[in-house]
Length: 378
Image (cartoon, rainbow, N blue to C red; front, side, top):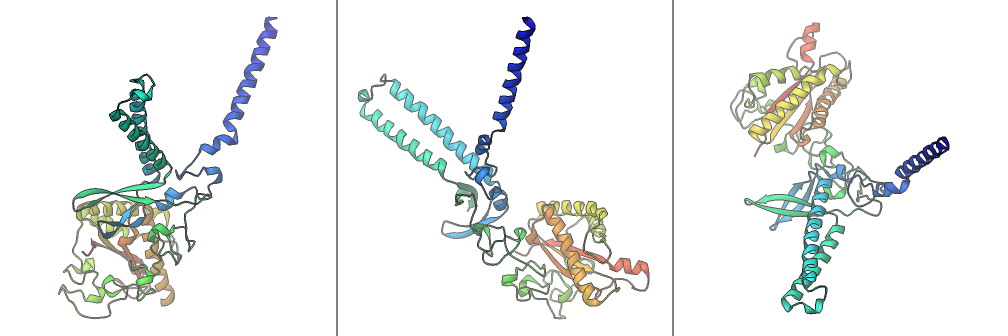
């Protein structure tokens, strides 16, 4: 008998564990999962990464009559903090209401006029807070004239958890600075074909790297406005004197940082391709850290990457290759967290050698990516 009882007990335990496992795996549990916090459960959310598609982008807001761009930093966390605030407030109000009613032993008619008025205020506040819990609003903190203010962004996802994106580039219209032209996320839905930081829709020379002050067109002049010995067309900082070996810009870096930049300028690519070789990534990681350190010290920077090749191959091929290689370095730095809007790229092919192309060593020296880091113009 004992053996039978023991066997039945094990069978019962096995059935219970099996049923428990089934319950854990039941599809109904999935209805409670909402990865991006937009109120639409994953099982019917066709865009379950709303938070990731908005984080890091800016939305346009009006504060005290002035238009400004406000960055979204943690959409899902913002939703949760806002909901938590209303839930805590509701809990406090419910307790106050309960205490108020218990003071008259549940007979509301015994409440004084003052108590009735307070009960009405509590009920109104509870109703408003419950309505707020349904609103999908991101609250951003901004400082205006030294005072902190809250700016609200209404997130209008549809029944399937998606936001309007009329150009279909994956950047929702509310943060897309070029909502009618497909672009890339790193540039807020815009394009910059020549990589000069002047976006295509406002670039007068969209296929030729140029300068911001010339609406994206290159400087063709031979003048030297800042009298530093670097002619304007070659001077990245034509209005501020700087040494020739830094493209006419003042040096912001110390000796150690300069060594990192010099090593990064010699990053290796696959032969005749713009693909970075694995051994180049370590020095580019160090370059990204230099950029972060300089940003902390000087504020927003302006970074220029210029690609150069040796003379092997046609000039046309080398020109495109040098531009593509500069863009590859930019893309890697952006992937490490560097702001894409601070990096301008250009490519000059074989036009600007620093050594002879008659020897293997000279060609190696000419295959480079010149890197200039300076403060952004005010």
